[in-house]
Amino acid sequence: MLRFEVTTDPAKIDFAAVYRFLNAQSNWAQGIPRDLFDRAMRNALCFAGLLEGEQIAFARVISDYATFANLVDVFTVPEFRGNGYATRLLTAVFAHPDLQGLRRFTLATRDKHPLYAKFGFHPPLFPETLMERYSPDIYKTG
Image (cartoon, rainbow, N blue to C red):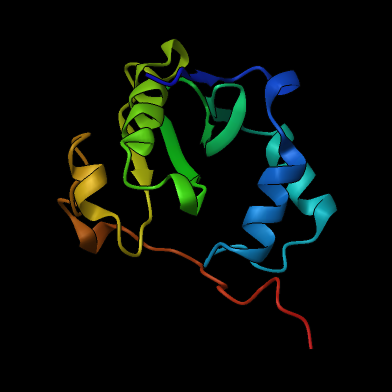
């Protein structure tokens, strides 16, 4: 069995690979400027999924580490999808000691609802209380 590990050590995370994926392959961050990406990574708890030392998965959590967290930028490199690596990555995310006891943990997903349901996520109990400012095309130019 291949060795899969999850790390939060920034020295072991290939941020250049994360940037390439988010900028070119994600449906949520295409065109993100590199300096903005770097600032976002510095101000979050980042998780890399490594298969035999090669980074194949990533997730990022934005949190105050006391009451709230938001899960973002979750992906598995396409050729490794369907092997349970996202589940293993998320298991590590939700087990992280700094993310315990939070009142609210949120995320937004277009199509991975069954994956997140395994971790207790569901539509908001009171959607009428939620609001957002959303600019989906903010990174697009021209």
